[in-house]
Image 1: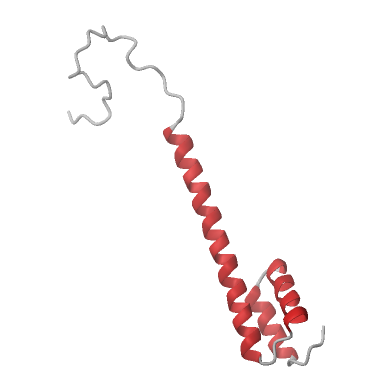
Image 2 (image 1 turned 60 degrees about the vertical axis):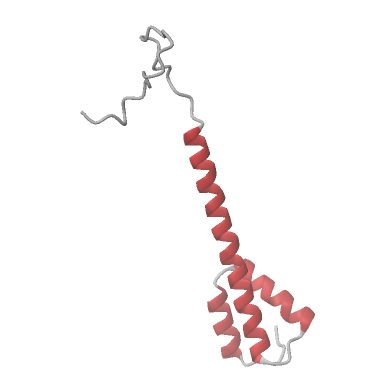
Length: 100
C-alpha cells in the first residue's frame, strides 16, 4: 500500500506492531484516516500496541481469576466422617495449619 510515507518507516511500524492483527488495524487506520505526518501514524501504532497489551493483560487476569475460583470451589473430600460431631466448636477439622 502506498500512502506517501517512506518504506523504511512502514517496515519499522510493521516490526513494532508485531502481529498480523495489529498490522491490519494500522492499515485500516492509514486508509480511513489518512494521517498527514509520520508522528500521527506513529502515535496510532503506539496506541494499537498499548490496546493489544491491555487486552492481553485482561485475558491473563481473567484466566488467573478463573483458575483461582476453580481451586477455591473445587470439590473436597468430607474430612469430618470420623468425627463424632458433638457440636464442639473448638474442633476445627483442618489440620494443615497446625504446627506440631
